[in-house]
Image (cartoon, rainbow, N blue to C red):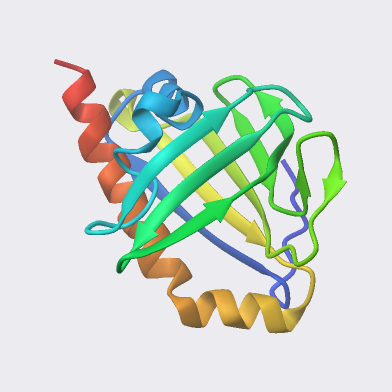
Length: 158
Protein backbone atom coordinates (compact mmCIF):
# COMPACT_ATOMS: atom_id res chain seq x y z
CA UNK A 1 0.00 0.00 0.00
CA UNK A 2 1.53 3.30 -1.11
CA UNK A 3 0.53 6.02 1.33
CA UNK A 4 2.69 8.79 -0.13
CA UNK A 5 3.77 10.00 3.28
CA UNK A 6 4.92 13.60 3.30
CA UNK A 7 7.65 14.29 5.84
CA UNK A 8 6.56 17.94 5.98
CA UNK A 9 3.01 17.17 7.13
CA UNK A 10 2.83 13.52 8.27
CA UNK A 11 4.00 11.73 11.40
CA UNK A 12 4.16 7.94 11.46
CA UNK A 13 5.45 4.97 13.41
CA UNK A 14 5.16 1.21 13.12
CA UNK A 15 5.38 -1.34 15.89
CA UNK A 16 4.69 -5.06 16.14
CA UNK A 17 2.17 -5.85 18.89
CA UNK A 18 2.08 -9.32 20.47
CA UNK A 19 -1.69 -9.65 20.11
CA UNK A 20 -3.83 -10.81 17.18
CA UNK A 21 -5.07 -8.29 14.65
CA UNK A 22 -8.75 -9.02 15.35
CA UNK A 23 -8.27 -7.97 18.99
CA UNK A 24 -6.47 -4.76 18.05
CA UNK A 25 -9.37 -3.97 15.71
CA UNK A 26 -11.94 -4.77 18.38
CA UNK A 27 -10.17 -2.51 20.88
CA UNK A 28 -10.13 0.40 18.43
CA UNK A 29 -13.76 0.02 17.36
CA UNK A 30 -15.71 -0.65 20.57
CA UNK A 31 -16.27 2.15 23.10
CA UNK A 32 -15.91 -0.11 26.13
CA UNK A 33 -12.31 -0.81 25.10
CA UNK A 34 -11.16 2.64 23.94
CA UNK A 35 -11.19 4.11 27.45
CA UNK A 36 -8.53 1.57 28.54
CA UNK A 37 -5.75 2.70 26.20
CA UNK A 38 -6.58 5.69 23.98
CA UNK A 39 -4.77 8.37 25.99
CA UNK A 40 -1.51 8.01 27.91
CA UNK A 41 -2.01 7.29 31.61
CA UNK A 42 -2.53 8.89 34.05
CA UNK A 43 -4.88 10.89 31.80
CA UNK A 44 -8.31 9.36 31.25
CA UNK A 45 -10.91 8.82 28.57
CA UNK A 46 -14.20 9.65 30.27
CA UNK A 47 -16.61 9.13 27.36
CA UNK A 48 -16.61 7.52 23.92
CA UNK A 49 -19.35 7.49 21.27
CA UNK A 50 -18.76 5.44 18.12
CA UNK A 51 -20.85 4.93 14.99
CA UNK A 52 -18.47 2.71 13.02
CA UNK A 53 -19.17 3.57 9.38
CA UNK A 54 -17.89 6.08 6.86
CA UNK A 55 -19.34 9.39 8.00
CA UNK A 56 -20.14 7.96 11.42
CA UNK A 57 -19.02 9.67 14.60
CA UNK A 58 -15.91 9.01 16.60
CA UNK A 59 -16.32 11.27 19.63
CA UNK A 60 -14.32 11.10 22.83
CA UNK A 61 -13.86 13.10 25.98
CA UNK A 62 -10.55 13.21 27.84
CA UNK A 63 -9.57 14.40 31.27
CA UNK A 64 -6.03 15.77 31.20
CA UNK A 65 -4.61 17.34 34.34
CA UNK A 66 -8.11 18.18 35.54
CA UNK A 67 -9.15 19.73 32.22
CA UNK A 68 -11.95 18.23 30.11
CA UNK A 69 -11.23 17.96 26.40
CA UNK A 70 -14.03 17.10 23.96
CA UNK A 71 -13.05 15.64 20.61
CA UNK A 72 -15.54 15.23 17.80
CA UNK A 73 -14.75 13.51 14.56
CA UNK A 74 -15.87 11.17 11.84
CA UNK A 75 -14.63 8.04 10.17
CA UNK A 76 -13.40 8.52 6.62
CA UNK A 77 -12.51 4.90 5.87
CA UNK A 78 -13.33 1.63 7.62
CA UNK A 79 -11.78 -1.58 6.30
CA UNK A 80 -12.42 -4.28 8.94
CA UNK A 81 -9.25 -5.51 10.63
CA UNK A 82 -7.05 -3.59 8.15
CA UNK A 83 -7.56 0.16 8.10
CA UNK A 84 -9.28 2.81 10.18
CA UNK A 85 -9.15 6.47 9.16
CA UNK A 86 -10.74 9.22 11.25
CA UNK A 87 -10.49 12.98 11.41
CA UNK A 88 -11.45 15.93 13.54
CA UNK A 89 -11.84 18.05 10.37
CA UNK A 90 -15.54 17.16 10.41
CA UNK A 91 -18.13 16.13 12.92
CA UNK A 92 -21.12 13.88 12.24
CA UNK A 93 -23.18 15.04 9.28
CA UNK A 94 -20.00 16.31 7.60
CA UNK A 95 -20.11 19.57 9.51
CA UNK A 96 -16.68 21.23 9.06
CA UNK A 97 -14.69 21.84 12.23
CA UNK A 98 -13.59 25.41 12.88
CA UNK A 99 -10.01 24.44 13.75
CA UNK A 100 -9.15 20.88 12.67
CA UNK A 101 -5.92 19.34 13.88
CA UNK A 102 -5.30 16.05 12.08
CA UNK A 103 -6.47 12.96 10.28
CA UNK A 104 -5.40 9.67 11.87
CA UNK A 105 -4.81 6.42 10.02
CA UNK A 106 -4.37 3.05 11.68
CA UNK A 107 -3.08 0.24 9.50
CA UNK A 108 -3.12 -3.35 10.73
CA UNK A 109 -1.42 -6.35 9.18
CA UNK A 110 -0.60 -9.85 10.34
CA UNK A 111 2.67 -9.92 12.25
CA UNK A 112 4.98 -12.71 13.33
CA UNK A 113 3.75 -15.35 15.75
CA UNK A 114 0.11 -14.27 15.48
CA UNK A 115 0.84 -10.65 16.35
CA UNK A 116 -0.10 -7.43 14.58
CA UNK A 117 1.99 -5.00 12.60
CA UNK A 118 0.51 -1.71 13.82
CA UNK A 119 1.12 1.54 11.95
CA UNK A 120 -0.20 4.88 13.19
CA UNK A 121 -0.12 7.91 10.92
CA UNK A 122 -1.14 11.47 11.75
CA UNK A 123 -1.67 13.72 8.74
CA UNK A 124 -1.74 17.47 9.23
CA UNK A 125 -2.86 20.38 7.06
CA UNK A 126 0.50 22.13 7.13
CA UNK A 127 4.06 21.78 8.41
CA UNK A 128 3.32 24.01 11.40
CA UNK A 129 0.56 21.69 12.68
CA UNK A 130 2.82 18.70 12.18
CA UNK A 131 5.63 20.40 14.12
CA UNK A 132 3.21 21.30 16.92
CA UNK A 133 2.04 17.69 17.16
CA UNK A 134 5.60 16.37 17.20
CA UNK A 135 6.53 18.85 19.98
CA UNK A 136 3.41 17.80 21.91
CA UNK A 137 4.91 14.32 21.99
CA UNK A 138 3.43 12.40 19.05
CA UNK A 139 6.01 9.62 19.22
CA UNK A 140 5.98 9.21 22.99
CA UNK A 141 2.20 9.67 23.25
CA UNK A 142 1.16 7.39 20.42
CA UNK A 143 3.88 4.95 21.47
CA UNK A 144 2.44 4.88 24.99
CA UNK A 145 -1.02 4.33 23.54
CA UNK A 146 0.31 1.36 21.52
CA UNK A 147 1.94 -0.09 24.65
CA UNK A 148 -1.26 0.37 26.67
CA UNK A 149 -3.31 -1.13 23.83
CA UNK A 150 -1.06 -4.17 23.68
CA UNK A 151 -1.20 -4.73 27.46
CA UNK A 152 -4.98 -4.29 27.54
CA UNK A 153 -5.56 -6.59 24.54
CA UNK A 154 -3.33 -9.27 26.12
CA UNK A 155 -5.72 -9.25 29.07
CA UNK A 156 -8.61 -9.94 26.70
CA UNK A 157 -6.84 -13.07 25.41
CA UNK A 158 -7.23 -14.88 28.73
